[in-house]
Amino acid sequence: MIKPEQPNISLGFIPLTDSAPLIIAKELGFFEQWGLNVTLQKQNSWATLRDKLHAGVLDAAQMLAPMPLASALGLGAPPANVITPLVLSLNGNAITLSEGLLQEVLKENEINSVTLPMAAYLLQKVVEKRKRNGEAKLKFATVFPYSCHYYQLRDWLKAVKVDLDDVEMLVVPPVSMVECLKNGDIDGFCVGGPWNAKAVRAGIGMTALTSFDIWQDSPEKVLGLLEEFHKKYPNTVLALCAALKQACAWLESVPNRFEAARLLCNEKYLNAELDVIAPSLLGSCLTHQSLPPRSIPSYNQFSVSNNGCINQPELVRGEWLIKHMVSAGQIPPHVTIPLDLVAKVFRPDIYQQMRLLIEDQGVQFYRRSG
Image (cartoon, rainbow, N blue to C red; front, top):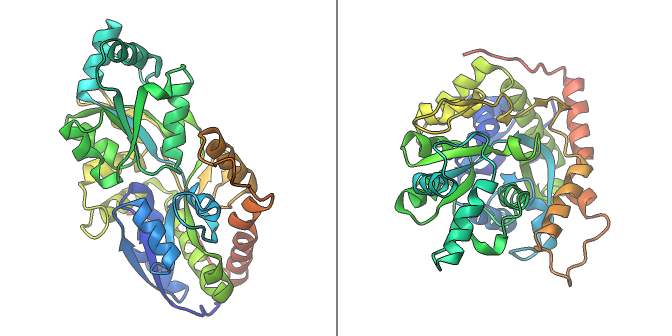
């Protein structure tokens, strides 16, 4: 077993269902197995998490897949050399509409119900009516400007030519989404679990569709850390990746996922009820209090998808995310995208070193049930 140069690690996370690999690695002793003493530090917002990582307050962090690229480009903050050696999850987001907006959609389209996943064209009449009558624009919240949530919401609306100038896009921390929806501050949101399910359980929203309905099997969360940290502590980074890779593999089993949901409920992690955390982990999307759940087997993916192992940070994925940043107008004309940017940020070479290490050590990815 390798010896980490720096065994004491502060690892940041946001209270979301797909923080499961970090929590499982901590609770089941995978970090300890690799010689690490990891302290999980819960953060309220992605901006706070990013700033603490940049400043070295956090050694590493769960990050949104586009965030390391945005950091490298200096978007929203001074540039920082953030890299990602490991993809933690695919999919996991959903778009939820307020009960008030749902009723408005039904009324303007003269229908009694909507077919799920809901097509965005049903919003067109609401948007047009509000514009015609001088009413407030629909307000949709996402969790961070440089996020798959933002790009997925844009793609959903643009697919049916809803003019993005006719709606407002706000940034709200994940843990605040349900309260904002309840208070009428927003009309809908795109967020990761368990906050969509919490809105449904509370009777204040309908989950119209998941990110899997928009982009099938897209990277959602990654491990992020400063390049300088990796250069200084390469064995520590390999150990960290190996422990998290074990946790991702453990999460393949459905019985294990129910156990994971139970662990995530803890106040120091998600501080939420089992009946809002468990569904997405078990492939179920809660839709509305009056409607049955939808079966979405790939709602949360941590290790394997239809395309095989998901944990390697493939360059093509990074290039795809850059294209969405450009399409969204987030990269100003004066900012030059270096040709080797994605290769500097997405690091499959570190991932492959970790895989070889695991093989050399003969580590078994055991799957404990319950």
